[in-house]
Image (tube, rainbow, N blue to C red; front, side, top):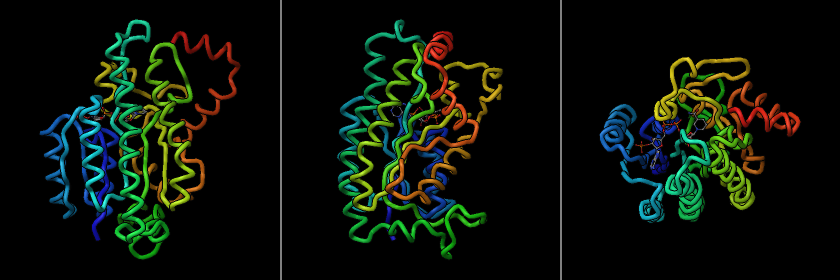
Length: 291
Ligand SMILES: NC(=O)c1ccc[n+]([C@@H]2O[C@H](COP(=O)([O-])OP(=O)(O)OC[C@H]3O[C@@H](n4cnc5c(N)ncnc54)[C@H](OP(=O)(O)O)[C@@H]3O)[C@@H](O)[C@H]2O)c1
Protein backbone atom coordinates (compact mmCIF):
# COMPACT_ATOMS: atom_id res chain seq x y z
CA UNK A 1 0.00 0.00 0.00
CA UNK A 2 1.46 3.35 -1.03
CA UNK A 3 1.37 6.19 1.47
CA UNK A 4 3.90 9.01 1.52
CA UNK A 5 4.86 11.13 4.52
CA UNK A 6 6.48 14.52 3.82
CA UNK A 7 8.85 15.82 6.51
CA UNK A 8 10.42 19.27 6.18
CA UNK A 9 13.75 19.76 7.94
CA UNK A 10 14.61 16.06 8.01
CA UNK A 11 18.39 16.61 7.76
CA UNK A 12 18.95 16.53 11.52
CA UNK A 13 17.33 16.57 14.95
CA UNK A 14 13.60 16.06 15.43
CA UNK A 15 12.88 15.90 11.67
CA UNK A 16 15.44 13.17 11.15
CA UNK A 17 13.94 11.20 14.06
CA UNK A 18 10.46 11.56 12.50
CA UNK A 19 11.85 10.24 9.20
CA UNK A 20 13.37 7.19 10.89
CA UNK A 21 10.13 6.39 12.71
CA UNK A 22 7.88 6.93 9.68
CA UNK A 23 10.12 4.71 7.52
CA UNK A 24 10.10 2.03 10.24
CA UNK A 25 6.28 2.17 10.11
CA UNK A 26 6.45 1.36 6.37
CA UNK A 27 5.89 4.79 4.83
CA UNK A 28 7.52 6.12 1.68
CA UNK A 29 9.02 9.53 2.44
CA UNK A 30 9.54 12.93 0.87
CA UNK A 31 12.26 14.55 2.99
CA UNK A 32 13.41 18.15 2.66
CA UNK A 33 16.26 20.39 3.78
CA UNK A 34 19.11 22.47 2.35
CA UNK A 35 21.99 20.04 3.01
CA UNK A 36 21.89 17.57 0.14
CA UNK A 37 24.71 15.14 1.18
CA UNK A 38 23.18 14.53 4.64
CA UNK A 39 19.68 14.01 3.21
CA UNK A 40 20.92 11.63 0.51
CA UNK A 41 22.84 9.62 3.11
CA UNK A 42 19.67 9.46 5.28
CA UNK A 43 17.54 8.41 2.29
CA UNK A 44 19.95 5.62 1.28
CA UNK A 45 20.14 4.32 4.85
CA UNK A 46 16.33 4.29 5.32
CA UNK A 47 15.76 2.62 1.94
CA UNK A 48 18.32 -0.05 2.81
CA UNK A 49 16.98 -0.69 6.30
CA UNK A 50 13.23 -0.46 5.75
CA UNK A 51 12.72 -1.16 2.02
CA UNK A 52 10.77 2.07 1.54
CA UNK A 53 11.19 4.71 -1.18
CA UNK A 54 12.68 8.01 0.02
CA UNK A 55 12.69 11.07 -2.22
CA UNK A 56 15.01 13.95 -1.36
CA UNK A 57 13.86 17.53 -2.02
CA UNK A 58 16.41 20.31 -1.60
CA UNK A 59 15.44 23.94 -1.06
CA UNK A 60 15.53 26.93 1.27
CA UNK A 61 11.97 27.07 2.56
CA UNK A 62 12.48 30.58 3.87
CA UNK A 63 12.11 31.72 0.26
CA UNK A 64 8.65 32.02 -1.26
CA UNK A 65 9.87 30.41 -4.51
CA UNK A 66 11.04 27.24 -2.76
CA UNK A 67 7.94 27.02 -0.56
CA UNK A 68 5.76 27.34 -3.69
CA UNK A 69 7.82 24.69 -5.51
CA UNK A 70 7.44 22.23 -2.62
CA UNK A 71 3.73 23.06 -2.41
CA UNK A 72 3.39 22.15 -6.10
CA UNK A 73 5.33 18.93 -5.46
CA UNK A 74 2.91 18.02 -2.65
CA UNK A 75 -0.09 18.75 -4.88
CA UNK A 76 1.37 16.31 -7.40
CA UNK A 77 1.85 13.51 -4.83
CA UNK A 78 -1.23 11.27 -5.23
CA UNK A 79 -0.60 9.11 -2.17
CA UNK A 80 0.35 11.83 0.32
CA UNK A 81 -0.91 10.85 3.77
CA UNK A 82 0.90 13.03 6.36
CA UNK A 83 2.63 16.42 6.24
CA UNK A 84 5.07 17.17 9.07
CA UNK A 85 6.25 20.78 8.86
CA UNK A 86 9.24 20.73 11.17
CA UNK A 87 11.88 22.96 9.51
CA UNK A 88 12.83 25.82 11.78
CA UNK A 89 15.65 27.55 13.62
CA UNK A 90 16.36 29.97 16.46
CA UNK A 91 18.23 33.24 16.43
CA UNK A 92 20.88 34.77 18.62
CA UNK A 93 20.24 38.48 18.34
CA UNK A 94 17.76 40.19 20.60
CA UNK A 95 14.74 41.54 18.72
CA UNK A 96 15.85 45.17 18.57
CA UNK A 97 19.28 44.09 17.29
CA UNK A 98 17.80 41.90 14.54
CA UNK A 99 17.87 43.24 11.00
CA UNK A 100 14.78 43.42 8.80
CA UNK A 101 15.92 40.62 6.49
CA UNK A 102 16.30 38.19 9.38
CA UNK A 103 12.86 39.13 10.71
CA UNK A 104 11.34 38.38 7.29
CA UNK A 105 13.30 35.13 6.87
CA UNK A 106 12.04 33.68 10.14
CA UNK A 107 8.49 34.78 9.36
CA UNK A 108 8.67 33.12 5.93
CA UNK A 109 9.87 29.76 7.24
CA UNK A 110 7.83 29.46 10.44
CA UNK A 111 4.61 31.10 9.21
CA UNK A 112 4.08 31.65 5.47
CA UNK A 113 5.74 28.39 4.44
CA UNK A 114 3.76 26.42 7.04
CA UNK A 115 0.45 27.88 5.89
CA UNK A 116 1.23 27.42 2.18
CA UNK A 117 2.32 23.79 2.64
CA UNK A 118 -0.72 22.88 4.74
CA UNK A 119 -3.03 24.60 2.23
CA UNK A 120 -1.45 22.64 -0.62
CA UNK A 121 -1.10 19.26 1.09
CA UNK A 122 -4.48 18.81 2.76
CA UNK A 123 -6.72 18.43 -0.33
CA UNK A 124 -4.49 15.59 -1.54
CA UNK A 125 -4.32 13.96 1.92
CA UNK A 126 -8.11 14.17 2.10
CA UNK A 127 -8.53 12.69 -1.39
CA UNK A 128 -6.14 9.81 -0.84
CA UNK A 129 -7.68 9.07 2.58
CA UNK A 130 -11.13 8.88 1.02
CA UNK A 131 -9.87 6.80 -1.91
CA UNK A 132 -8.53 4.29 0.62
CA UNK A 133 -4.90 4.83 -0.34
CA UNK A 134 -4.07 5.61 3.25
CA UNK A 135 -4.86 3.52 6.26
CA UNK A 136 -8.14 4.49 7.96
CA UNK A 137 -7.52 6.29 11.26
CA UNK A 138 -8.94 3.45 13.32
CA UNK A 139 -6.79 0.76 11.69
CA UNK A 140 -3.71 2.95 11.65
CA UNK A 141 -4.15 3.55 15.37
CA UNK A 142 -3.48 -0.14 15.88
CA UNK A 143 -0.34 -2.11 15.23
CA UNK A 144 0.12 -4.88 12.64
CA UNK A 145 -1.59 -7.38 14.94
CA UNK A 146 -4.31 -5.03 16.09
CA UNK A 147 -2.66 -3.90 19.33
CA UNK A 148 -3.02 -0.26 20.36
CA UNK A 149 -0.18 1.69 18.80
CA UNK A 150 2.33 2.79 21.40
CA UNK A 151 1.54 -0.18 23.61
CA UNK A 152 4.72 -1.65 25.07
CA UNK A 153 5.90 -3.71 22.15
CA UNK A 154 9.16 -4.14 20.23
CA UNK A 155 7.33 -4.17 16.89
CA UNK A 156 7.14 -0.91 14.96
CA UNK A 157 3.57 0.38 15.19
CA UNK A 158 1.50 0.35 12.00
CA UNK A 159 1.15 3.21 9.50
CA UNK A 160 0.24 6.72 10.58
CA UNK A 161 -3.33 7.97 10.20
CA UNK A 162 -3.73 10.73 7.58
CA UNK A 163 -3.23 14.31 8.73
CA UNK A 164 -0.85 17.14 9.58
CA UNK A 165 1.78 17.81 12.27
CA UNK A 166 3.17 21.32 12.81
CA UNK A 167 6.32 21.62 14.92
CA UNK A 168 5.99 24.68 17.14
CA UNK A 169 7.73 25.10 20.51
CA UNK A 170 7.14 25.47 24.24
CA UNK A 171 8.38 29.03 23.55
CA UNK A 172 5.00 29.67 21.88
CA UNK A 173 3.55 29.99 25.41
CA UNK A 174 6.41 32.12 26.75
CA UNK A 175 6.70 35.32 24.72
CA UNK A 176 10.07 36.93 25.41
CA UNK A 177 11.72 40.21 24.42
CA UNK A 178 14.98 38.51 23.35
CA UNK A 179 13.85 35.79 20.93
CA UNK A 180 10.65 37.75 20.25
CA UNK A 181 10.30 36.68 16.59
CA UNK A 182 10.91 33.04 17.48
CA UNK A 183 8.29 32.96 20.24
CA UNK A 184 5.79 34.95 18.13
CA UNK A 185 6.18 32.83 14.98
CA UNK A 186 5.86 29.63 17.03
CA UNK A 187 2.67 31.04 18.62
CA UNK A 188 1.36 31.53 15.06
CA UNK A 189 1.73 27.77 14.49
CA UNK A 190 -0.36 27.05 17.61
CA UNK A 191 -3.06 29.41 16.34
CA UNK A 192 -2.95 27.99 12.81
CA UNK A 193 -3.13 24.39 14.03
CA UNK A 194 -6.10 25.16 16.28
CA UNK A 195 -7.84 27.14 13.54
CA UNK A 196 -7.72 24.40 10.91
CA UNK A 197 -8.29 21.44 13.24
CA UNK A 198 -12.13 21.40 13.13
CA UNK A 199 -12.12 21.14 9.33
CA UNK A 200 -9.47 18.43 9.33
CA UNK A 201 -11.31 16.49 12.05
CA UNK A 202 -14.60 16.75 10.14
CA UNK A 203 -12.90 14.79 7.35
CA UNK A 204 -11.37 12.27 9.76
CA UNK A 205 -7.87 13.75 9.45
CA UNK A 206 -5.63 13.88 12.53
CA UNK A 207 -3.63 16.95 13.49
CA UNK A 208 -1.04 17.95 16.07
CA UNK A 209 0.86 21.07 17.02
CA UNK A 210 3.98 19.72 18.70
CA UNK A 211 5.50 22.08 21.29
CA UNK A 212 8.81 20.60 22.44
CA UNK A 213 10.93 22.04 25.25
CA UNK A 214 14.74 21.95 25.25
CA UNK A 215 15.84 19.13 22.94
CA UNK A 216 19.37 17.97 22.06
CA UNK A 217 19.68 18.69 18.31
CA UNK A 218 21.72 20.94 16.02
CA UNK A 219 19.35 23.81 16.94
CA UNK A 220 21.60 24.93 19.81
CA UNK A 221 24.81 24.23 17.81
CA UNK A 222 23.62 26.90 15.41
CA UNK A 223 23.14 29.23 18.39
CA UNK A 224 26.66 28.40 19.69
CA UNK A 225 25.34 27.28 23.05
CA UNK A 226 28.14 25.95 25.27
CA UNK A 227 27.80 22.43 26.70
CA UNK A 228 27.11 23.67 30.22
CA UNK A 229 23.97 25.51 29.02
CA UNK A 230 22.64 22.25 27.60
CA UNK A 231 22.01 20.40 30.84
CA UNK A 232 19.09 19.85 33.17
CA UNK A 233 18.64 22.67 35.65
CA UNK A 234 15.73 22.99 38.11
CA UNK A 235 12.57 22.17 36.21
CA UNK A 236 14.31 22.62 32.83
CA UNK A 237 14.85 19.08 31.52
CA UNK A 238 16.36 18.24 28.15
CA UNK A 239 15.00 15.50 25.91
CA UNK A 240 16.46 13.62 22.94
CA UNK A 241 15.08 14.19 19.44
CA UNK A 242 14.12 10.53 19.23
CA UNK A 243 12.12 10.69 22.48
CA UNK A 244 10.31 13.85 21.30
CA UNK A 245 9.42 12.34 17.89
CA UNK A 246 8.32 9.02 19.42
CA UNK A 247 6.03 10.71 21.94
CA UNK A 248 4.65 12.98 19.20
CA UNK A 249 3.74 10.11 16.87
CA UNK A 250 2.34 7.98 19.68
CA UNK A 251 0.05 10.83 20.70
CA UNK A 252 -0.83 11.62 17.06
CA UNK A 253 -1.97 8.04 16.51
CA UNK A 254 -3.97 7.71 19.73
CA UNK A 255 -5.59 11.10 20.11
CA UNK A 256 -9.06 11.73 18.72
CA UNK A 257 -8.92 14.08 15.70
CA UNK A 258 -11.47 16.25 17.58
CA UNK A 259 -9.28 16.82 20.67
CA UNK A 260 -7.08 19.91 21.15
CA UNK A 261 -4.17 19.38 18.72
CA UNK A 262 -1.58 21.12 20.94
CA UNK A 263 0.84 18.65 22.52
CA UNK A 264 3.74 19.41 24.88
CA UNK A 265 5.95 16.30 25.21
CA UNK A 266 7.41 15.56 28.67
CA UNK A 267 5.92 16.06 32.15
CA UNK A 268 8.50 18.71 33.15
CA UNK A 269 7.73 20.71 30.02
CA UNK A 270 4.01 20.55 30.78
CA UNK A 271 4.76 21.80 34.30
CA UNK A 272 6.80 24.70 32.85
CA UNK A 273 3.95 25.61 30.52
CA UNK A 274 1.47 25.54 33.43
CA UNK A 275 3.74 27.77 35.57
CA UNK A 276 4.10 30.32 32.78
CA UNK A 277 0.30 30.43 32.62
CA UNK A 278 -0.19 31.22 36.34
CA UNK A 279 2.81 33.39 37.22
CA UNK A 280 1.76 37.03 37.78
CA UNK A 281 2.26 39.16 34.67
CA UNK A 282 4.75 41.61 36.24
CA UNK A 283 6.90 38.84 37.67
CA UNK A 284 6.86 37.04 34.32
CA UNK A 285 7.91 40.23 32.51
CA UNK A 286 10.84 40.84 34.83
CA UNK A 287 12.06 37.23 34.39
CA UNK A 288 11.52 37.35 30.61
CA UNK A 289 13.44 40.63 30.30
CA UNK A 290 16.53 38.90 31.65
CA UNK A 291 16.15 35.70 29.58
N1 LIG B 1 15.85 21.75 19.75
C1 LIG B 1 14.99 22.38 20.55
O1 LIG B 1 15.29 22.61 21.75
C2 LIG B 1 13.62 22.78 20.02
C3 LIG B 1 12.65 23.17 20.98
C4 LIG B 1 11.39 23.54 20.51
C5 LIG B 1 11.10 23.52 19.16
N2 LIG B 1 12.07 23.13 18.26
C6 LIG B 1 11.69 23.15 16.85
O2 LIG B 1 11.94 21.86 16.29
C7 LIG B 1 12.11 21.99 14.88
C8 LIG B 1 13.30 21.15 14.46
O3 LIG B 1 14.49 21.70 15.02
P1 LIG B 1 15.64 20.79 15.65
O4 LIG B 1 15.68 21.08 17.10
O5 LIG B 1 15.52 19.40 15.22
O6 LIG B 1 16.93 21.52 15.04
P2 LIG B 1 17.92 21.10 13.85
O7 LIG B 1 18.63 19.85 14.19
O8 LIG B 1 18.73 22.33 13.62
O9 LIG B 1 16.95 20.83 12.61
C9 LIG B 1 16.34 21.87 11.90
C10 LIG B 1 15.93 21.35 10.54
O10 LIG B 1 15.28 22.42 9.83
C11 LIG B 1 15.89 22.56 8.56
N3 LIG B 1 15.88 23.96 8.17
C12 LIG B 1 16.26 25.03 8.89
N4 LIG B 1 16.16 26.16 8.18
C13 LIG B 1 15.68 25.80 6.96
C14 LIG B 1 15.38 26.51 5.78
N5 LIG B 1 15.55 27.84 5.68
N6 LIG B 1 14.91 25.83 4.71
C15 LIG B 1 14.76 24.48 4.78
N7 LIG B 1 15.03 23.74 5.86
C16 LIG B 1 15.50 24.40 6.95
C17 LIG B 1 17.31 22.03 8.73
O11 LIG B 1 17.80 21.48 7.51
P3 LIG B 1 18.98 22.14 6.63
O12 LIG B 1 19.97 22.76 7.56
O13 LIG B 1 19.51 21.01 5.81
O14 LIG B 1 18.26 23.14 5.79
C18 LIG B 1 17.12 20.90 9.72
O15 LIG B 1 16.79 19.72 9.05
C19 LIG B 1 12.28 23.50 14.59
O16 LIG B 1 11.09 24.00 14.05
C20 LIG B 1 12.52 24.10 15.99
O17 LIG B 1 12.05 25.43 16.08
C21 LIG B 1 13.31 22.76 18.67
